Length: 109
Image: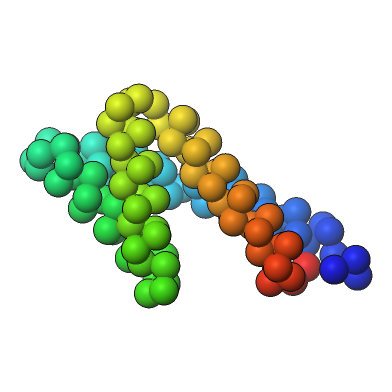
């Protein structure tokens, strides 16, 4: 792990834990969930946006965990009505996942 490029790891983290949560939350909670809340009951809107969030990641193995994460993020959005709070929660989740992958040696710099 010592021989890996820390600059590359930092850029990867910046993409995974900063850019992706901002873009995904603008789309899934900022736009789609808010739109669905106008036509579906709250839990239906959260569930549909959560499934969409999971499916867009194109990872069948993580479909259920990503759906659960999407539902939690949707619930936080509905309760707080603060998109930056959801972005921060998503960023923290992705940072934890990134650090875990680094510890397992599954992120190459």
